[in-house]
Image: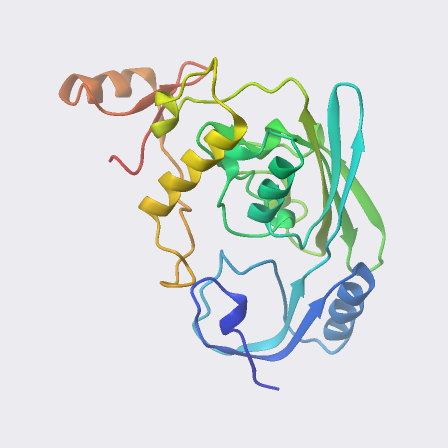
Amino acid sequence: MNHSLKAWNTFGIDQQTNELVCAENEQQLLNAWQSANASHHPVLILGEGSNVLFLDTFQGTVIVNRIKGIEITEQPDAWHLHVGAGENWHHLVQHTLQLGMPGLENLALIPGCVGSSPIQNIGAYGVELQRVCEYVDCVELSTGKHLRVGAAECRFGYRDSIFKHEYQDGFAIIAVGLRLSKQWHPVLTYGDLTRLDPTTVTPQQVFDSVCHMRTTKLPDPKVNGNAGSFFKNPVVTAEIAQELLAKFPTAPHYPQADGSVKLAAGWL
């Protein structure tokens, strides 16, 4: 009873929960969920708590997903990764770079776990998870039945996916499959990245630049509790974008494939 949640949310809010379970494997997660459900207690599954703000005691069971493991299969054209949902996302980015497997560097320092990444199709500096995602492994909590959702079935959109809708309740993500191509092409369309030379830039330089931009814009949650940058850049019609640019010619804007234009919420 009365377990502190301070270490389990990035705001560092010192609220309590009746029961706290740190699940290091799928069976522990299932047992905790099914036990709480049988007792009609509310259940909350957390990754690293970067999308929650606890305002009061949680009158139920909090399950922290810490299912870990990184399995790598190498093919002639790509590396295929099977990553446990409880792995820290930024640590995964660092790990792949250290192994000489680029492709995630634009997504450095995004808070949270790997299992959370497909839910809102995390993205930053011109790259979204859908660019590298092959599949998402889920488990139906009431039955223990496994379900593999292929990338095409994930219905990835701008900070959106099927996991915000059909699979929001009654399922838990236990692993994510990623494909990192050996034909690396840097994405240098945002912020300080535009100053890098695409003919000579390295994945490590992109990583370092992204980390620099994020640390100068956002406080360290270990020092000042925060949830990172969770806003969505507004996407408007070309006509509205032209009206804005007529008044503010230097406003950051990014034309999209469908003719719309993405604006920069931070600049606005």
